[in-house]
Length: 458
Ligand SMILES: [Zn+2]
Ligand SMILES: [Zn+2]
Image 1 (cartoon, rainbow, N blue to C red):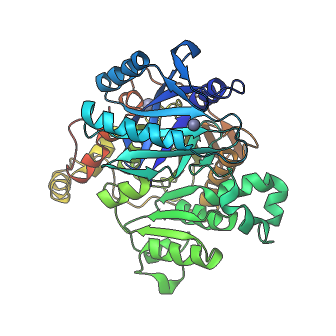
Image 2: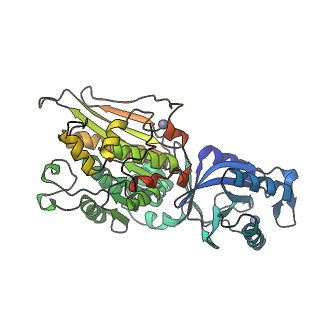
Image 3: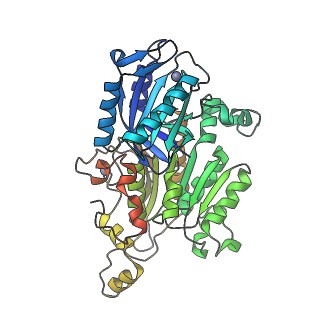
């Protein structure tokens, strides 16, 4: 699978340039590799005087091409060539001349930039087709994810944006009441969006059930824990006979009951493991429903470095003597360009570092009274979790259907019965924000090999 991820402002600039009029135009995307994704970092739009026009094609002059290649080598970027077929509307595909040009290109690149990935896209009015040259063969582009306060999903095979699932969604009544709210296109986007939910506890289990009813069809469920008796007050759908089962198995069974056609990938692992990180990094939208600072730290870093739209949920109750004095929660929607969770003050780095320590070291330090966090269970109530889960799924709907821009920081105050937004600015010194879109080079997988990485974000 391969996904091209591009911010909405870059995507608009690219389309405005390529589709300015009826003439074919060209440009290059400079991208970083991030697991199955290519994250576009910059554009090089080729002006008309650096194009050579044939009768049925357009190519870039050699000096302009050499400039782009030098820059890609200097900045360790992957080149994706882009050109337009402005006369193609509903569908678009590479022409025979395009095929031939790309065949010659990869032969040339094997010589001057051996071993590097190369990509090509052709852009029509309402469709995109693409492919990647990697490991000496072409792989079709699965889709283009355009990120911003609402996200777009374009098929990568040149078919219309909504074709993949339009038929099956239209012919059933089950989404009729939602189609009346989001339109056919909004419902199709929900069906095509690949989602990962990390944490199948009090909030995550409710988020998961809501996503199943909403029409999500491609989901990864990630949690290493098993159901305990003390979870039965809040774990959606859990019964006494589920005690001892993996939480992801319970979530999968429930998802399947609501949505028999769904593709579900259950990962009974901690988020820091390689398999969990891989499942999470292939999502178009990531839900973080974890109750640890270390889990948030890793998810935040994964989302920011891999440019994955990330919806983080949390709730908390203060009840020092068994009497509530404060309670509430928050939902943070991170998309590229927004302040990360560290900027929002949602992660305690010292507690995260302790949680990441090996069990042996933790036990040793606990014995000597050096553990600052407490191992006493926190209070948790289903109605509060349900409110936060619903706020989070509403932001997901906003991201996909665009009925309004997804909010950055939403809080819920259970005592004063208030939902509001908090304005957060990016910390100019935030290390994690400085690594936005750097992809594989950020090496998030080090968490699977090293207990507490030396370069833990400050
Ligand atoms: Zn062409
Ligand atoms: Zn930040």
